[in-house]
Image (cartoon, chains in turn cyan, purple):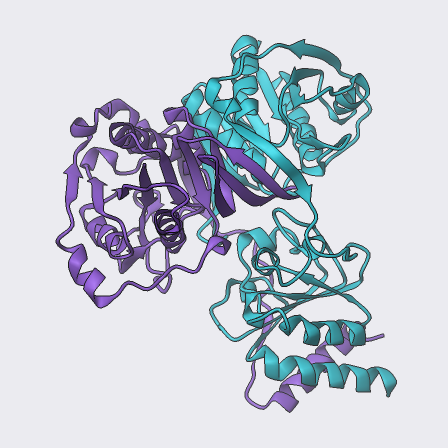
Length: 323
Length: 264
């Protein structure tokens, strides 16, 4: 039979929220196509309880494969086998780094069309059409598959997880991994660099990017965040540079937030950052480059030097609150 | 060992990119440059070569693109590559990720590198995926978005940020690694290197030279086609303040925040 196969990423006993969203989306689309949505989980000793949870998000069957965790290529082998044995037409992924790697590997292995950063999927005439924003999100394109199998890689937070209360059977599959898939090995996974900061409960976030120039630039953001009664967050670039803890990172491989106020200082607004904060109620951006993409999706944009503006803004906010 | 670095010519960041409505493909005319992420890949190759932990005999820059892509290749050579390979053929025009990865895989197969490096994304296509496609064709282990590479017993110890924090992965050679821009600060080429780049060998290949089957590349054989371009649902344009008098700017920001009851 044909159908949709969804990759479900898990870590430390829980599924990734984006994977659960992809399962829900797969179930919705399978309903429209008149077929079934299956899920696949690859890991070490995945229990029945965990695997069968995917049923309540809409999967009718879960394929369970014993294999290494956190690496893409063993999953490529597993999905290629399961898709071939079960004649799946579409392979679906939620947002995230592994989804990109696995989906791309499958495109090569199965000679399949692949579309990434998909924000919406539609069933038309018995086929799926993927909507993909391009050119810094200035256009949205409909992408049509021209191959037997289509690979759909969702954008972070594109698909909403919905518990519908169904149940799934769990089927174990043995996979002979390709030699090259076992030539990379995980030494250490999920290291939390920097201290623990809580940004997910804050109503106000003041976020800093590369435009701060140096790690010390965060001191003035702490001051402003204090004045506003909020917390400080950061982009991936400055976390990779060691200026701010990973726990405070917004975006593709960090947190997704939607505070009442998001004030971005020295952040250009790359897609990978945008996907983690675009649902914020009010977005204010301060950037010296008037062409920065962040001005395309901010409610108030200030073109200027943050080193001049932020300290004065902090003073003015304090004065206003005390006044 | 031999390192191949995949590079790409992309529209200059200052050029506004657009879709050609008649072809449904990216209009690639206008000023071009070497994809900024690829300069980090070349720098990573040079640091491995100069680092001494592993012997690097040769760094080869490889591209697929129009004839004009030679400029991007020359820039790659001026940054340290020893020679260059350019795959150019009309039959390749409009290839999707699938076809591009297949074609580059064929060129790399002939080079038989011990390591393939590339930038994690291109400035224009925003696909992040070519490395993983190429790796599957070459049957090599692969990792993308790597921000640190150390040589350890002839293997590469790579670090990257993934969904749950930083991962450290040991990758055996030969391998395909895509790098993020946090991995290094690319050097500027010296005038001497820029002049010298013109004298380094550049090997031009057509698809027949690389054993590429014509029915697997080009727009007509793409496995996915884009169509029906539309503007995204419009978000109301935000207000913009140009900071001229900072005291006044700050006053306006505070008033704006106050109107929305964000200073309560």
